[in-house]
Length: 164
Image (cartoon, rainbow, N blue to C red; front, side, top):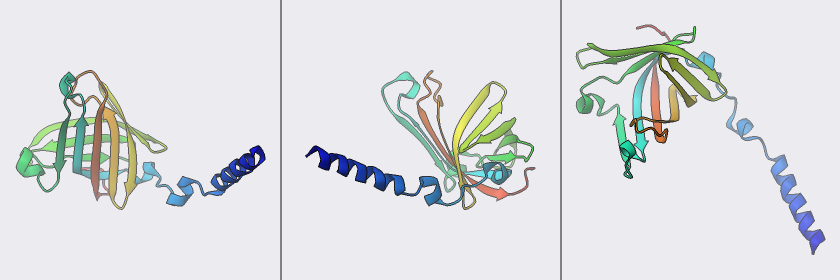
């Protein structure tokens, strides 16, 4: 009986060893450093806060491009990534007036995007495909002292130019 068990385990191990690597099965990976430079506009944003402001209730913030302007009275924000690994994000009102702006440096490591600005460093998992960038991270969005808020955003590539 033991001999059959070992043969079965060896067979299972051989099957798994011969399967293609997941990276190979997905096709070639996108070079994020060359794909990211350009102008990106927010298409979708969802933040799930499981311990909203330190409590035991979950709060979900969601914004999609169809309702962004009507619901929040601002345009979807844009982020400009330069090939020199600098970025700036611009928030504008409905009449194109500047509401706020932030600037910083960016870099990629594998599937991770690192964004650094004064007082803040954030690491996102990043996937770019078909003119869209999907970013996800665990953050302290509700500022309750716990980095447990699930941040997910989709950018749409507007232009390969990284200037306004």
